[in-house]
Image 1 (cartoon, rainbow, N blue to C red):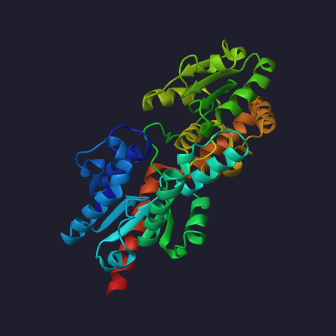
Image 2: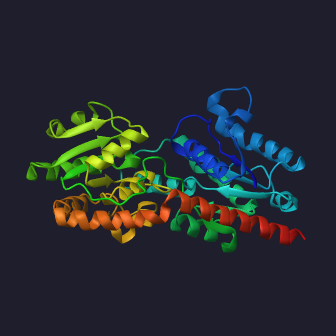
Length: 370
């Protein structure tokens, strides 16, 4: 197939939506598809801070031109990127238009508003103007005009089909592709009680919950070793000096370094407040780590009953979970279950399912236009 992947980001780096899109493009090319990736370079000159505002108009112009010139069989565009198109014109195209979620914005805004209501963060007044206002209307429009919608989890599917008013037969599930840190082999598991915490010290990543739980358990387990991935040197120490000698901070890691981190730890503590998917959870599960994560879409869809899911903000539940996985036998059982659960999202399986959904969308549109 001739495929275009459109994403409202600069096409640099190996993380986030841009990195995920570039990884997918390479995987599809390896299977013989012609794939172009379109990012913010189509906007042209102008202040970078306005790229988010300008991109939907630029992407609509680009897609219309690509359609007229019959360049692609399918255009897969991230949420909001097709907001300037209409359902009527897309229906007339031979080319299929897919709107793809990289983490549905409506659910992210709902999580932040809930956090603000609990007093965990303060939202600026302008938050409701763009991120929780205009941007959400662009996302909703891009969902409605598409021939098909790709979502990441059950919560997104429910929102898109009920509130978003997209027909259920137009929605399909997908996942971002795990990179080189995904383990394709069997695992023996690490017997040491060693916890890997992920995420920067910010509200969305649940960092204060992790700190509060670790402070309560770390002195009870002298053998416990903790590594915090994503924080800056001194951050954890500044927030709670009791953790100075027990927590190793790793600001960032390459794919090779991530493999080493997974192999050196037996537990993943991932207390994010909002995720579209959660590649770190998937990668850690593939290495046989016992997973403790918040009971949110993403981690819930990846590991289900194979890990311990704790309610958002419930420190007591996190402490109980950490004490539970202090048992080597419990860690071994959970790690084996997590490894098995990760098989569903092995990159080859994800790409094969996506190809199948692409072909079904192309066939359905051809039949509808016949």
